Length: 536
Image 1 (cartoon, rainbow, N blue to C red):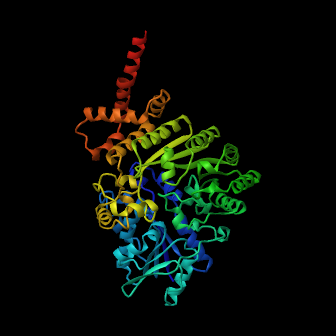
Image 2 (cartoon, rainbow, N blue to C red):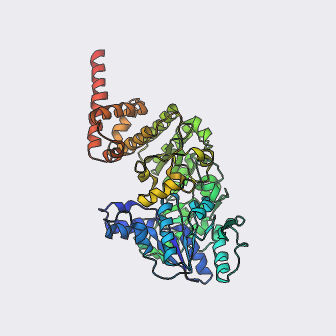
Image 3 (cartoon, helix red, strand yellow):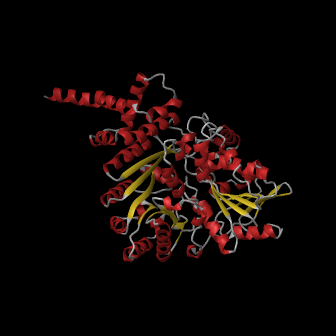
């Protein structure tokens, strides 16, 4: 069979037309579709010669050569599939699922004899709804596919029924059928090295992504990881990871890695064993990973730093202790803050990820999250992040609120969902909330969505252009949510004509930092001077 596997588009940096080709090639390589490359390697083990298409690369080519046709990427990408295939399998992520579906439908129109399939997290979570709404899609492979895909291709090549292939959702006689769930890969060391050789320019990476493990034993209400991987926590062995890192260094000259796993530090002993193996190795490697703040301590952080760890992603999610319980995250906020400080002390960069807009969130919960965001600025190597809740398909939050989701003005906030949606994609989103719930909002009883959006723009752009200023306000004891409210009132008085759709551009403009400085001088420095004179 002639098989083509397609990596979903994930990198939207290429909208920046000032990006050099060198930097673009780095970004493409660093977003290599690991899931697709793992499947390709499995097929190669069985004697097949799959082709791999990375839609990130096609998107870069599109933006470079077709800037005027801003939203015709689907047509541009579909035209790339000139060869005739027996099977075309697309990966999926929530942010770019609409455009990937458009591309797949166009490929099916061009190649009606080909089986066009989907896999990956988003397709797995919306399998039935996707097949019901998009007839060109023939089937969906649910969950981990390294065992399912070879069985599927064998059945297709022999024209056998698909009923005995686990992990499939497919169409037969106008009915949609689901086979039993496929089991996950128990021994990740048994998987072959990803087929990086099927992608060009991998040597241009500053760092290489490598899969460290799969699954998370926790059950946060907003997260889809435990559903896709069935909560089965697994890690590759230290020996296997060292083997893969050495192979990358020998082949591509790269010694820095993004080790992909949602929750590396669950098993402390295995993290320590990995670090000890790195320290004992003759080669020096540098790496980043994800962790929970309650599954790590200062001693382990120091060991990880000595073994080459240079970055950790912490999903803190909320600074409110009350909300930690509601979303089943369960972190202790003082402990989380201490872990961020410990990482900075060891010169490990930390992404401090926070979410606002939970259905139960109150203003006091929001105040605590904003406080945690700005308090993290005390740590030199901390990078606080703030997003508004997106109800991911199949998560408890989505299931609980799916009947009450609402879609705001199509142009108001989609750029923050990770991909620039064109007119066709926006229509798809509006027509199919069950397939694209992550573009919708959940109702919030105590807070206003427009307020949260501007707060996000204010904080994220504020730390880019005036990090020290925001930190000094916090160190002086300022309530940073109140600072924003006062700033917003001042901004609205100064710029009453500024519409919501223009706010994001304003906060990214050169005018914002100078306006912010003027506001602080007028509101806080002048007040401080007056208080000093009065006391004298």
